[in-house]
Length: 417
Image 1 (spheres, helix red, strand yellow):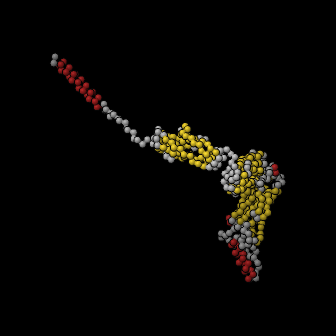
Image 2 (cartoon, helix red, strand yellow):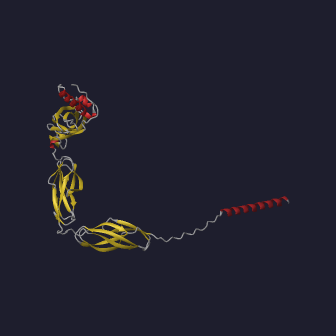
Image 3 (cartoon, rainbow, N blue to C red):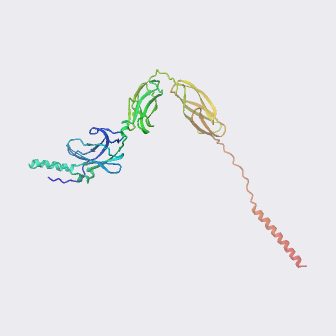
């Protein structure tokens, strides 16, 4: 029985991927090899998966692994074939190789060729022929598996995936988990509402070179902070976070490793918020905002200034001091409970025209208002400019006439003598 390969577009290998692994248990069930480095004598494993290769319950997939050294020399090739009936859409194969002692150190390339040797058109023809073979009592047709040469000419039947890995004679000295996060601690486990709690955790780099990893801080299953740490080789660092809650009850704090090659051990602790707890921290006012009711006023017109202040410590009284152009304008004694927020109002009047900068003590906050006069200023009188050039011309003209008359008289007098 001869089958013609149809090139009509049909479902074939949709996509796929490859991973460097150290253990494979089944389809999509494997353990990643964290650093992709292999010393001679170790086992290199590459997991490859093809998607969309089931055609009417039939799977026929070939995998070719081509390994090239740092000089682009082919050092190994392997062919694997899968043929079976099943309903799953995906297929996988694992390449395994004991790294030879003769492989040089450096970056290696693994080209993974995946050939889907069936398609829907072929299977339609196959089942039609199969039915006819029973009806006509003819020979049962063979499964129409195309050869790789024909499959490679069809983009939908041939997929190439490239992975890189390292051959490194010192790789066996590297730990499986480069970064370790452990010993999460709280500075207190029972606090008053909104009282801050310090969370600390140790992060260790067990690698011979410095590197970085990332952490997420969760409070009651919600991410509230993220950080990235750079840690020197074979060293540890303590990282601190601050959390708080105004809700009475127990609250769970978690540290989640998000960086590569990082393991976290016992990364969950609980603290309790209770109304019975007293605030032990000293009274401390934090200035949050300055508001001015008018940007521009006339001289001696009142400006109302509101300073927003919060007490982050225990209940107490502190002065709130207002400065105008760095000079103390007024101070008020204010009493606040823990976590209480209040607007403190000041009325300011300035008679001189100009700009006035408003600040409060122990704060970088500042605002500006202007005192401007609306009375019109008389325009200066400008004396008319006297044009002197025409008078000068008259004087010169008269002088010339007088001189000419004088010369004429001298001439006539001398002639009649």
